[in-house]
Image 1 (tube, helix red, strand yellow):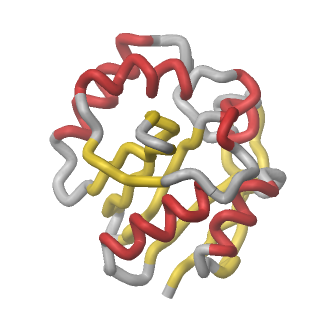
Image 2 (cartoon, rainbow, N blue to C red):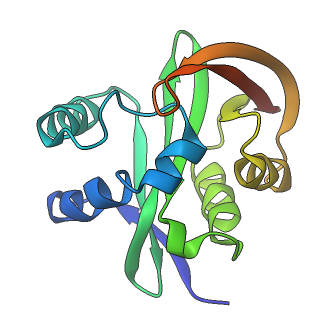
Length: 157
């Protein structure tokens, strides 16, 4: 297994993160994405908002020192939520699962909510392996698909 790590996100990571978050296959799978993943100005504005978000814990996911994605825990509307993005070339190797577990050890707040498109079997498996349990579903508009789809809500107590 490769060496998986978490570290702070650096300004010089942003070009790679932007490219990773534009992968059309990954965007479709994630479903709930930016309105236009190719809009660099909006991406940069979003990154600036993240830099000033109170209580946000955002990490770069590394594999053998290479930037492979990002993960974050944040508070919104009184809930603590987790999100992550892993470049497609790293899918299916247990990297996302380990990165999520590592971040959850760093941020011991509970409960934590996670959300994934209900047909995103990979993300749902990652979250279940990290201890999350399905607690609900909803139907919401998914920018990447241009329609409303079912979203699964999971909770880690």
